[in-house]
Image 1 (cartoon, rainbow, N blue to C red):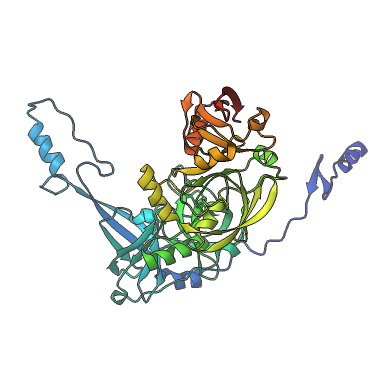
Image 2 (image 1 turned 180 degrees about the vertical axis):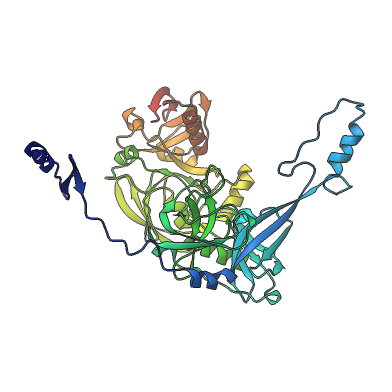
Length: 504
Protein backbone atom coordinates (compact mmCIF):
# COMPACT_ATOMS: atom_id res chain seq x y z
CA UNK A 1 0.00 0.00 0.00
CA UNK A 2 1.21 3.50 -0.88
CA UNK A 3 1.56 5.82 2.10
CA UNK A 4 -0.12 9.23 2.37
CA UNK A 5 3.35 10.86 2.17
CA UNK A 6 4.05 9.25 -1.20
CA UNK A 7 0.63 10.22 -2.50
CA UNK A 8 1.20 13.83 -1.48
CA UNK A 9 4.60 13.73 -3.23
CA UNK A 10 2.98 12.32 -6.34
CA UNK A 11 0.44 15.14 -6.42
CA UNK A 12 3.27 17.67 -6.24
CA UNK A 13 4.71 16.29 -9.51
CA UNK A 14 1.93 17.94 -11.51
CA UNK A 15 3.14 20.55 -13.99
CA UNK A 16 1.63 22.89 -16.58
CA UNK A 17 -0.24 21.14 -19.37
CA UNK A 18 0.00 17.63 -17.86
CA UNK A 19 -1.66 15.40 -15.29
CA UNK A 20 0.03 12.70 -13.24
CA UNK A 21 -0.81 9.23 -12.12
CA UNK A 22 1.02 6.84 -9.84
CA UNK A 23 2.49 3.59 -11.03
CA UNK A 24 4.00 1.67 -8.16
CA UNK A 25 5.87 4.37 -6.27
CA UNK A 26 6.71 6.73 -9.20
CA UNK A 27 4.67 9.70 -10.38
CA UNK A 28 4.53 9.60 -14.20
CA UNK A 29 3.31 12.57 -16.30
CA UNK A 30 0.56 11.79 -18.79
CA UNK A 31 0.23 13.93 -21.94
CA UNK A 32 -2.49 13.99 -24.52
CA UNK A 33 -1.17 11.98 -27.47
CA UNK A 34 -2.18 13.24 -30.93
CA UNK A 35 -4.21 10.78 -32.92
CA UNK A 36 -2.43 9.39 -35.98
CA UNK A 37 -4.85 8.18 -38.60
CA UNK A 38 -2.49 5.55 -39.99
CA UNK A 39 1.14 4.53 -40.14
CA UNK A 40 1.52 6.01 -43.61
CA UNK A 41 -0.34 7.04 -46.73
CA UNK A 42 -2.67 4.68 -48.55
CA UNK A 43 -1.06 2.33 -51.05
CA UNK A 44 0.99 4.17 -53.67
CA UNK A 45 0.78 1.27 -56.12
CA UNK A 46 -1.49 3.08 -58.59
CA UNK A 47 0.64 6.21 -58.49
CA UNK A 48 3.88 4.26 -58.90
CA UNK A 49 2.45 2.26 -61.82
CA UNK A 50 1.48 5.49 -63.57
CA UNK A 51 4.89 7.13 -63.07
CA UNK A 52 7.36 4.27 -63.55
CA UNK A 53 7.27 4.55 -67.34
CA UNK A 54 8.49 8.16 -67.25
CA UNK A 55 11.50 7.40 -65.04
CA UNK A 56 14.58 6.13 -66.87
CA UNK A 57 17.99 4.75 -66.14
CA UNK A 58 20.93 6.73 -67.51
CA UNK A 59 24.02 4.72 -68.45
CA UNK A 60 27.20 6.42 -69.61
CA UNK A 61 30.61 5.28 -70.77
CA UNK A 62 33.89 7.13 -70.86
CA UNK A 63 37.26 6.10 -72.20
CA UNK A 64 39.95 6.66 -69.60
CA UNK A 65 43.47 6.57 -70.97
CA UNK A 66 46.34 4.79 -69.31
CA UNK A 67 45.85 3.82 -65.69
CA UNK A 68 43.46 6.59 -64.74
CA UNK A 69 40.47 4.37 -64.24
CA UNK A 70 38.93 3.84 -60.81
CA UNK A 71 40.85 1.20 -58.89
CA UNK A 72 43.56 0.95 -61.54
CA UNK A 73 46.94 -0.24 -60.33
CA UNK A 74 49.78 2.04 -61.47
CA UNK A 75 52.67 0.54 -63.38
CA UNK A 76 55.58 -0.12 -61.04
CA UNK A 77 58.79 1.81 -61.48
CA UNK A 78 61.42 -0.74 -62.50
CA UNK A 79 65.19 -0.32 -62.56
CA UNK A 80 66.72 0.56 -65.90
CA UNK A 81 67.34 -2.61 -67.94
CA UNK A 82 65.12 -4.82 -65.78
CA UNK A 83 64.31 -8.20 -67.43
CA UNK A 84 60.66 -7.69 -66.39
CA UNK A 85 60.29 -4.42 -68.32
CA UNK A 86 58.76 -5.99 -71.44
CA UNK A 87 56.34 -8.07 -69.39
CA UNK A 88 54.99 -5.10 -67.45
CA UNK A 89 54.84 -2.97 -70.62
CA UNK A 90 52.62 -5.57 -72.28
CA UNK A 91 50.35 -5.93 -69.26
CA UNK A 92 49.85 -2.31 -68.25
CA UNK A 93 49.87 -0.58 -71.62
CA UNK A 94 47.58 -3.02 -73.39
CA UNK A 95 45.23 -4.07 -70.60
CA UNK A 96 42.48 -1.80 -71.86
CA UNK A 97 42.34 -3.65 -75.14
CA UNK A 98 43.80 -0.70 -77.02
CA UNK A 99 47.03 -1.81 -78.65
CA UNK A 100 47.83 1.79 -79.48
CA UNK A 101 48.66 2.89 -75.95
CA UNK A 102 46.11 1.69 -73.43
CA UNK A 103 42.70 2.86 -72.33
CA UNK A 104 39.66 1.45 -70.66
CA UNK A 105 35.94 2.03 -70.69
CA UNK A 106 34.51 3.34 -67.44
CA UNK A 107 30.74 3.02 -67.05
CA UNK A 108 28.36 4.63 -64.62
CA UNK A 109 24.66 4.52 -63.90
CA UNK A 110 22.18 7.13 -62.78
CA UNK A 111 18.54 8.10 -63.13
CA UNK A 112 16.43 10.59 -65.04
CA UNK A 113 12.89 11.35 -66.13
CA UNK A 114 11.03 12.39 -69.29
CA UNK A 115 9.48 15.88 -69.21
CA UNK A 116 8.45 16.16 -72.89
CA UNK A 117 7.30 13.04 -74.73
CA UNK A 118 6.83 14.79 -78.09
CA UNK A 119 10.36 16.23 -78.14
CA UNK A 120 12.07 13.38 -76.28
CA UNK A 121 13.44 15.60 -73.48
CA UNK A 122 14.98 13.87 -70.46
CA UNK A 123 16.24 15.56 -67.27
CA UNK A 124 19.01 14.23 -65.03
CA UNK A 125 21.95 15.45 -62.92
CA UNK A 126 25.00 16.98 -64.54
CA UNK A 127 27.31 14.77 -62.48
CA UNK A 128 25.59 11.67 -63.90
CA UNK A 129 26.65 12.47 -67.48
CA UNK A 130 29.73 14.65 -66.93
CA UNK A 131 32.63 13.84 -69.31
CA UNK A 132 30.70 10.95 -70.86
CA UNK A 133 31.57 9.79 -74.38
CA UNK A 134 28.29 7.91 -74.83
CA UNK A 135 24.94 8.34 -73.07
CA UNK A 136 22.11 5.83 -73.22
CA UNK A 137 18.60 6.08 -71.79
CA UNK A 138 17.11 2.80 -70.60
CA UNK A 139 13.35 2.54 -70.19
CA UNK A 140 11.45 0.35 -67.76
CA UNK A 141 10.30 -2.00 -70.53
CA UNK A 142 13.89 -2.75 -71.58
CA UNK A 143 14.13 -0.39 -74.57
CA UNK A 144 17.41 1.54 -74.85
CA UNK A 145 17.89 4.77 -76.84
CA UNK A 146 20.99 6.80 -77.55
CA UNK A 147 20.87 10.29 -76.04
CA UNK A 148 22.43 13.58 -77.06
CA UNK A 149 23.33 16.31 -74.63
CA UNK A 150 21.22 19.47 -74.92
CA UNK A 151 22.87 21.47 -72.14
CA UNK A 152 24.22 21.36 -68.59
CA UNK A 153 24.41 23.66 -65.60
CA UNK A 154 27.15 22.87 -63.10
CA UNK A 155 25.89 25.41 -60.56
CA UNK A 156 22.62 23.54 -59.97
CA UNK A 157 23.84 20.11 -61.17
CA UNK A 158 21.12 19.86 -63.85
CA UNK A 159 21.50 18.35 -67.33
CA UNK A 160 19.03 18.05 -70.20
CA UNK A 161 19.21 15.17 -72.72
CA UNK A 162 17.32 14.41 -75.90
CA UNK A 163 16.31 11.04 -77.36
CA UNK A 164 14.51 10.24 -80.59
CA UNK A 165 10.81 10.30 -79.67
CA UNK A 166 10.06 8.06 -82.65
CA UNK A 167 12.26 5.34 -81.25
CA UNK A 168 9.94 4.55 -78.35
CA UNK A 169 6.55 5.54 -77.00
CA UNK A 170 7.42 7.99 -74.22
CA UNK A 171 5.57 8.86 -71.05
CA UNK A 172 6.23 12.29 -69.55
CA UNK A 173 5.78 13.83 -66.13
CA UNK A 174 5.53 17.51 -65.29
CA UNK A 175 7.10 19.75 -62.69
CA UNK A 176 4.99 20.73 -59.68
CA UNK A 177 5.32 23.67 -57.31
CA UNK A 178 7.93 22.85 -54.66
CA UNK A 179 7.12 26.06 -52.76
CA UNK A 180 3.79 24.55 -51.71
CA UNK A 181 5.44 21.53 -50.11
CA UNK A 182 5.58 21.44 -46.32
CA UNK A 183 7.76 19.61 -43.87
CA UNK A 184 5.94 16.34 -43.17
CA UNK A 185 4.33 15.99 -46.62
CA UNK A 186 4.59 12.54 -48.20
CA UNK A 187 6.90 12.16 -51.20
CA UNK A 188 7.93 9.30 -53.45
CA UNK A 189 11.32 8.75 -55.11
CA UNK A 190 11.84 6.57 -58.17
CA UNK A 191 15.31 5.77 -59.45
CA UNK A 192 18.01 3.25 -60.23
CA UNK A 193 19.81 2.55 -56.92
CA UNK A 194 22.96 0.46 -57.27
CA UNK A 195 22.02 -0.32 -60.87
CA UNK A 196 19.12 -2.54 -59.81
CA UNK A 197 16.57 -0.87 -62.08
CA UNK A 198 13.39 1.07 -61.35
CA UNK A 199 12.89 1.24 -57.59
CA UNK A 200 10.18 3.05 -55.64
CA UNK A 201 10.67 4.44 -52.12
CA UNK A 202 8.38 6.57 -50.00
CA UNK A 203 9.07 9.04 -47.21
CA UNK A 204 8.35 12.56 -46.09
CA UNK A 205 9.93 15.95 -46.50
CA UNK A 206 12.24 16.26 -43.51
CA UNK A 207 13.36 19.85 -44.05
CA UNK A 208 13.51 22.61 -46.62
CA UNK A 209 16.00 25.30 -47.69
CA UNK A 210 19.02 23.14 -46.86
CA UNK A 211 22.46 24.54 -47.69
CA UNK A 212 24.99 21.71 -48.07
CA UNK A 213 27.70 23.90 -49.64
CA UNK A 214 27.55 22.15 -52.99
CA UNK A 215 26.95 25.28 -55.05
CA UNK A 216 25.99 28.96 -55.02
CA UNK A 217 22.23 28.35 -55.15
CA UNK A 218 21.83 25.61 -52.55
CA UNK A 219 18.18 25.39 -51.48
CA UNK A 220 17.67 21.65 -51.16
CA UNK A 221 14.64 19.67 -50.07
CA UNK A 222 15.67 17.09 -47.47
CA UNK A 223 13.80 13.80 -47.43
CA UNK A 224 13.97 10.49 -45.62
CA UNK A 225 12.72 8.57 -48.67
CA UNK A 226 15.51 6.10 -49.37
CA UNK A 227 17.97 7.56 -51.89
CA UNK A 228 21.11 5.61 -52.72
CA UNK A 229 23.89 5.57 -55.30
CA UNK A 230 22.29 5.52 -58.72
CA UNK A 231 19.25 7.53 -57.63
CA UNK A 232 21.01 10.72 -58.75
CA UNK A 233 18.98 12.55 -61.38
CA UNK A 234 15.76 10.75 -60.52
CA UNK A 235 12.52 12.52 -59.60
CA UNK A 236 10.99 13.21 -56.22
CA UNK A 237 7.21 13.19 -56.60
CA UNK A 238 4.43 14.73 -54.55
CA UNK A 239 1.19 12.88 -53.87
CA UNK A 240 -0.27 14.10 -57.16
CA UNK A 241 2.57 12.61 -59.18
CA UNK A 242 4.24 15.95 -59.97
CA UNK A 243 8.02 16.32 -59.84
CA UNK A 244 8.85 18.63 -56.96
CA UNK A 245 12.55 17.75 -56.77
CA UNK A 246 15.51 16.13 -58.53
CA UNK A 247 17.34 13.70 -56.25
CA UNK A 248 21.00 14.64 -56.24
CA UNK A 249 22.88 13.98 -52.99
CA UNK A 250 22.93 11.99 -49.76
CA UNK A 251 24.74 12.13 -46.46
CA UNK A 252 26.00 8.68 -45.58
CA UNK A 253 29.16 7.27 -44.00
CA UNK A 254 28.58 3.95 -45.76
CA UNK A 255 27.34 5.07 -49.17
CA UNK A 256 23.87 3.70 -48.49
CA UNK A 257 20.74 5.53 -47.39
CA UNK A 258 20.51 6.57 -43.75
CA UNK A 259 17.43 8.68 -44.36
CA UNK A 260 19.18 11.94 -45.27
CA UNK A 261 18.75 12.69 -48.96
CA UNK A 262 18.63 15.97 -50.84
CA UNK A 263 16.68 17.06 -53.90
CA UNK A 264 16.93 20.17 -56.07
CA UNK A 265 13.55 21.92 -55.69
CA UNK A 266 11.46 22.17 -58.85
CA UNK A 267 11.15 25.93 -58.32
CA UNK A 268 14.87 26.19 -59.12
CA UNK A 269 15.24 23.27 -61.52
CA UNK A 270 12.30 24.02 -63.83
CA UNK A 271 13.67 27.41 -64.85
CA UNK A 272 17.12 25.95 -65.50
CA UNK A 273 15.62 23.17 -67.63
CA UNK A 274 13.63 25.70 -69.68
CA UNK A 275 16.75 27.78 -70.35
CA UNK A 276 18.86 24.77 -71.28
CA UNK A 277 16.16 23.60 -73.69
CA UNK A 278 15.81 27.02 -75.27
CA UNK A 279 19.40 28.24 -75.36
CA UNK A 280 21.59 25.24 -74.56
CA UNK A 281 22.96 27.28 -71.65
CA UNK A 282 21.74 29.31 -68.69
CA UNK A 283 21.01 33.04 -68.80
CA UNK A 284 20.92 34.27 -65.24
CA UNK A 285 20.36 37.74 -63.89
CA UNK A 286 23.41 39.60 -62.56
CA UNK A 287 23.51 42.46 -60.09
CA UNK A 288 27.26 42.99 -60.11
CA UNK A 289 28.05 43.24 -56.42
CA UNK A 290 30.24 41.42 -53.95
CA UNK A 291 28.34 40.60 -50.78
CA UNK A 292 28.92 39.35 -47.24
CA UNK A 293 26.71 38.42 -44.28
CA UNK A 294 25.22 41.04 -42.00
CA UNK A 295 26.38 40.20 -38.48
CA UNK A 296 24.96 41.70 -35.31
CA UNK A 297 27.98 43.99 -35.01
CA UNK A 298 27.64 45.17 -38.60
CA UNK A 299 23.91 45.75 -38.17
CA UNK A 300 24.54 47.84 -35.05
CA UNK A 301 27.24 49.91 -36.75
CA UNK A 302 24.91 50.58 -39.70
CA UNK A 303 22.01 51.64 -37.48
CA UNK A 304 19.87 48.55 -38.21
CA UNK A 305 17.57 47.14 -35.55
CA UNK A 306 18.16 43.52 -36.61
CA UNK A 307 20.80 41.64 -38.58
CA UNK A 308 19.27 40.77 -41.95
CA UNK A 309 19.91 41.11 -45.66
CA UNK A 310 23.13 41.07 -47.67
CA UNK A 311 25.88 43.64 -47.13
CA UNK A 312 27.35 45.06 -50.32
CA UNK A 313 31.10 44.76 -49.80
CA UNK A 314 32.05 45.76 -53.32
CA UNK A 315 30.59 47.03 -56.59
CA UNK A 316 31.90 45.35 -59.75
CA UNK A 317 33.53 47.51 -62.40
CA UNK A 318 31.34 47.72 -65.46
CA UNK A 319 28.49 45.90 -63.71
CA UNK A 320 24.80 46.84 -63.70
CA UNK A 321 25.07 48.97 -60.53
CA UNK A 322 28.42 50.63 -61.23
CA UNK A 323 26.43 53.83 -61.71
CA UNK A 324 26.02 54.59 -58.02
CA UNK A 325 22.52 53.15 -57.66
CA UNK A 326 23.90 50.57 -55.22
CA UNK A 327 27.00 51.41 -53.21
CA UNK A 328 29.47 49.57 -51.04
CA UNK A 329 28.15 49.60 -47.48
CA UNK A 330 24.50 49.31 -48.55
CA UNK A 331 22.47 46.42 -47.13
CA UNK A 332 20.02 44.81 -49.56
CA UNK A 333 16.93 43.69 -47.65
CA UNK A 334 14.46 43.16 -50.50
CA UNK A 335 14.90 42.32 -54.18
CA UNK A 336 12.03 42.53 -56.66
CA UNK A 337 9.49 42.11 -53.89
CA UNK A 338 11.28 39.16 -52.27
CA UNK A 339 12.66 39.53 -48.75
CA UNK A 340 16.38 38.88 -48.35
CA UNK A 341 16.68 37.31 -44.91
CA UNK A 342 20.33 36.33 -45.20
CA UNK A 343 23.22 36.70 -47.63
CA UNK A 344 22.70 33.41 -49.50
CA UNK A 345 19.14 34.41 -50.46
CA UNK A 346 20.33 37.20 -52.78
CA UNK A 347 22.36 35.26 -55.39
CA UNK A 348 19.52 32.81 -55.86
CA UNK A 349 16.71 35.34 -56.38
CA UNK A 350 18.89 37.46 -58.66
CA UNK A 351 19.89 34.44 -60.74
CA UNK A 352 16.24 33.44 -61.15
CA UNK A 353 15.38 36.89 -62.55
CA UNK A 354 15.35 37.57 -66.30
CA UNK A 355 18.31 39.34 -67.87
CA UNK A 356 17.49 42.96 -68.67
CA UNK A 357 14.62 43.17 -66.20
CA UNK A 358 14.25 46.44 -64.27
CA UNK A 359 13.64 45.61 -60.60
CA UNK A 360 13.12 47.50 -57.37
CA UNK A 361 15.81 46.90 -54.77
CA UNK A 362 15.22 47.96 -51.18
CA UNK A 363 18.43 48.94 -49.42
CA UNK A 364 19.48 50.37 -46.08
CA UNK A 365 22.01 53.15 -46.59
CA UNK A 366 23.44 54.90 -43.54
CA UNK A 367 20.51 53.69 -41.46
CA UNK A 368 17.86 54.93 -43.90
CA UNK A 369 15.71 52.53 -45.91
CA UNK A 370 15.22 53.46 -49.57
CA UNK A 371 14.28 51.88 -52.89
CA UNK A 372 16.43 52.02 -56.03
CA UNK A 373 15.67 50.83 -59.56
CA UNK A 374 18.20 48.43 -61.11
CA UNK A 375 18.37 46.84 -64.57
CA UNK A 376 19.94 43.40 -64.38
CA UNK A 377 22.84 42.25 -66.50
CA UNK A 378 23.70 38.67 -67.42
CA UNK A 379 25.76 36.65 -64.97
CA UNK A 380 27.53 34.68 -67.68
CA UNK A 381 28.70 37.92 -69.30
CA UNK A 382 30.06 39.07 -65.95
CA UNK A 383 31.93 35.79 -65.58
CA UNK A 384 33.52 36.18 -68.99
CA UNK A 385 34.53 39.73 -68.13
CA UNK A 386 36.16 38.61 -64.90
CA UNK A 387 37.74 35.60 -66.59
CA UNK A 388 39.35 37.78 -69.23
CA UNK A 389 40.75 40.22 -66.70
CA UNK A 390 41.66 37.82 -63.90
CA UNK A 391 41.80 34.32 -65.36
CA UNK A 392 39.15 33.31 -62.84
CA UNK A 393 35.40 32.72 -63.04
CA UNK A 394 34.51 32.45 -59.36
CA UNK A 395 31.54 34.80 -59.61
CA UNK A 396 28.76 33.13 -57.72
CA UNK A 397 28.73 34.66 -54.27
CA UNK A 398 29.20 38.25 -55.16
CA UNK A 399 31.67 38.12 -58.05
CA UNK A 400 34.65 37.50 -55.82
CA UNK A 401 37.27 37.53 -58.56
CA UNK A 402 36.10 40.64 -60.42
CA UNK A 403 37.68 44.07 -59.95
CA UNK A 404 35.63 46.48 -57.86
CA UNK A 405 35.26 50.23 -58.10
CA UNK A 406 34.28 50.56 -54.43
CA UNK A 407 34.40 48.24 -51.44
CA UNK A 408 33.24 48.10 -47.82
CA UNK A 409 35.74 46.81 -45.26
CA UNK A 410 36.14 47.26 -41.50
CA UNK A 411 33.41 49.89 -41.39
CA UNK A 412 34.96 51.94 -44.18
CA UNK A 413 33.88 52.48 -47.77
CA UNK A 414 36.94 52.74 -50.01
CA UNK A 415 37.28 53.71 -53.65
CA UNK A 416 39.76 54.35 -56.40
CA UNK A 417 42.01 57.35 -56.05
CA UNK A 418 41.46 59.11 -59.38
CA UNK A 419 41.05 62.66 -60.64
CA UNK A 420 37.44 62.78 -59.49
CA UNK A 421 38.10 61.62 -55.91
CA UNK A 422 41.25 63.76 -55.65
CA UNK A 423 39.20 66.82 -56.54
CA UNK A 424 36.32 65.86 -54.26
CA UNK A 425 38.50 65.45 -51.16
CA UNK A 426 41.31 67.82 -52.11
CA UNK A 427 43.98 65.11 -52.11
CA UNK A 428 47.46 66.10 -53.29
CA UNK A 429 48.77 64.68 -56.57
CA UNK A 430 51.72 62.91 -54.93
CA UNK A 431 49.52 60.85 -52.59
CA UNK A 432 48.86 57.29 -53.78
CA UNK A 433 46.76 54.42 -52.46
CA UNK A 434 43.03 53.82 -51.91
CA UNK A 435 40.80 56.67 -50.76
CA UNK A 436 38.36 56.31 -47.85
CA UNK A 437 35.05 57.78 -49.02
CA UNK A 438 32.89 57.00 -45.97
CA UNK A 439 33.21 55.71 -42.40
CA UNK A 440 30.31 53.96 -40.68
CA UNK A 441 29.21 55.41 -37.36
CA UNK A 442 30.27 53.38 -34.31
CA UNK A 443 32.52 51.17 -36.46
CA UNK A 444 36.05 50.10 -35.49
CA UNK A 445 37.39 52.59 -38.04
CA UNK A 446 35.36 55.42 -36.54
CA UNK A 447 36.65 54.55 -33.07
CA UNK A 448 40.19 55.07 -34.40
CA UNK A 449 39.36 58.51 -35.72
CA UNK A 450 39.60 57.61 -39.40
CA UNK A 451 37.97 60.21 -41.61
CA UNK A 452 36.69 60.28 -45.21
CA UNK A 453 39.36 61.73 -47.49
CA UNK A 454 42.23 59.85 -45.87
CA UNK A 455 44.12 57.42 -48.08
CA UNK A 456 45.16 53.85 -47.25
CA UNK A 457 48.67 53.36 -48.63
CA UNK A 458 49.66 50.12 -46.89
CA UNK A 459 48.03 47.28 -44.99
CA UNK A 460 50.35 45.15 -42.84
CA UNK A 461 53.32 46.72 -44.60
CA UNK A 462 52.10 45.83 -48.09
CA UNK A 463 51.12 48.54 -50.57
CA UNK A 464 47.55 48.72 -51.85
CA UNK A 465 46.40 50.50 -54.97
CA UNK A 466 42.82 49.37 -55.60
CA UNK A 467 39.73 48.55 -53.52
CA UNK A 468 40.23 44.89 -54.47
CA UNK A 469 43.76 45.04 -53.03
CA UNK A 470 42.28 46.22 -49.73
CA UNK A 471 39.69 43.40 -49.65
CA UNK A 472 42.24 40.77 -50.58
CA UNK A 473 44.74 41.97 -47.97
CA UNK A 474 42.16 42.07 -45.17
CA UNK A 475 40.91 38.65 -46.23
CA UNK A 476 44.44 37.24 -46.14
CA UNK A 477 45.03 38.60 -42.65
CA UNK A 478 41.82 37.01 -41.40
CA UNK A 479 42.81 33.67 -42.91
CA UNK A 480 46.10 33.94 -41.02
CA UNK A 481 44.14 34.29 -37.78
CA UNK A 482 45.09 37.94 -37.25
CA UNK A 483 42.82 39.93 -34.95
CA UNK A 484 43.99 43.38 -36.00
CA UNK A 485 45.04 45.08 -39.22
CA UNK A 486 47.85 47.64 -39.30
CA UNK A 487 47.03 50.45 -41.73
CA UNK A 488 49.32 53.22 -42.92
CA UNK A 489 47.17 56.23 -43.74
CA UNK A 490 48.03 59.36 -45.65
CA UNK A 491 46.31 62.68 -45.05
CA UNK A 492 45.14 64.86 -47.91
CA UNK A 493 48.52 66.55 -47.94
CA UNK A 494 50.53 63.34 -47.65
CA UNK A 495 51.29 63.18 -43.91
CA UNK A 496 51.50 59.56 -42.77
CA UNK A 497 50.24 57.81 -39.65
CA UNK A 498 49.75 54.21 -38.53
CA UNK A 499 46.41 52.93 -37.23
CA UNK A 500 45.49 49.48 -35.91
CA UNK A 501 41.89 48.33 -36.48
CA UNK A 502 40.40 45.20 -34.95
CA UNK A 503 38.93 42.74 -37.45
CA UNK A 504 36.60 40.68 -35.23
